[in-house]
Image 1 (cartoon, rainbow, N blue to C red):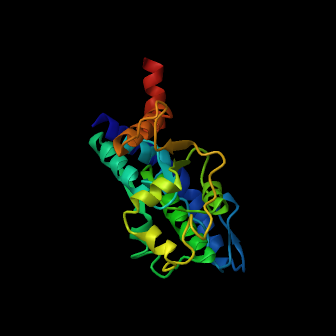
Image 2: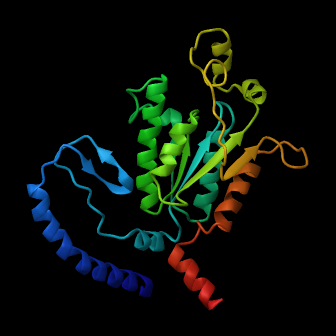
Image 3: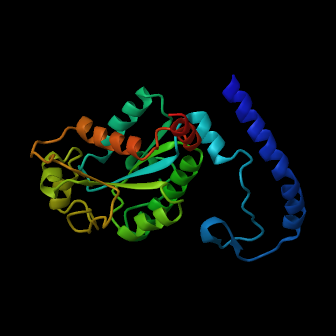
Length: 260
């Protein structure tokens, strides 16, 4: 109850400070007519008469409520590298610890949000751009976001990174050899691509550009040469999240350190 009361007081004070400027800017925005409007992080929109509005509840308040720090874990790698399997395993482990997550999977989003996109270079770029923006919204709300996408082009992944605050984008490269991915071939896609039934398939006749400086690199085998399970890989990522402070809210982590 004390924590909720304190959060309510913080929110009330923040709202009082914010309402005055917002009321003034509302009048000004009604008069604004522009062909190009700038938004956060230098974004430029080819639209008229729009304005970016900050949320009334600050991010740190949301993160304190959830007891965690928002972040995007971006799983990238070849088809069959285990991106979705490890992301799903990690999500279950985080849920068991009471953490709020959302899992965005490449196949799933193409049933809805991105169902109008194909697999050309242009459509792949737009696919990643959209998911990057959705992931950003979740992270800024304090949610641990697991995004599982082949995302073969380095430029597209870096574009997503640059749209986010420092530390919000964690690239998790599933560095699994194509030979092993093709051996697994859970959907039969490699076989179809080798037979010429699928064109532009990543790793066969379309390139995969490896990350140059991923925060996490997950290999098929550990340092001892033992094949890793999905649980082993998820545990490595969980340790990273703990070590970097994502599993506790920043304010809570600071107060805990001060009283230790």
